[in-house]
Image (tube, rainbow, N blue to C red; front, side):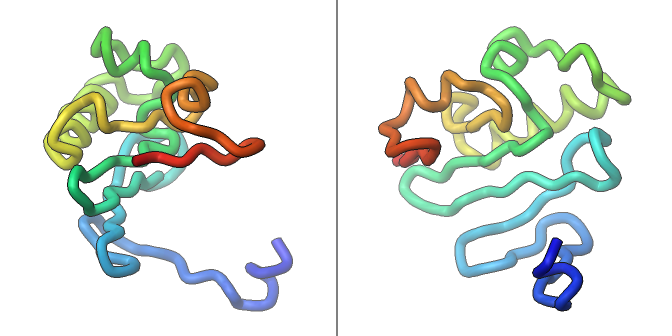
Length: 113
């Protein structure tokens, strides 16, 4: 909040916007207005889904979260994220504690490689 009040935040408007070299923002589902997810370029690339895919179970079952506002858009976002990541296995859900079991952790930070 302090950074926002002090005009230290940069809002990203739009879809497919590179915000740093190799980090691109995409518009996801309507959890919040124009919520975005990130594609991290690399070999291999990963997608950090934030709120566009909450749990691994949603991705593997291709079933939207129960509180979604637009199920069709959420499923389309899953498909797009899988294409951008090169594999559904490289989508990191935004709310799943299993992230910390799949990737090495130090405290509450998971190292994704």
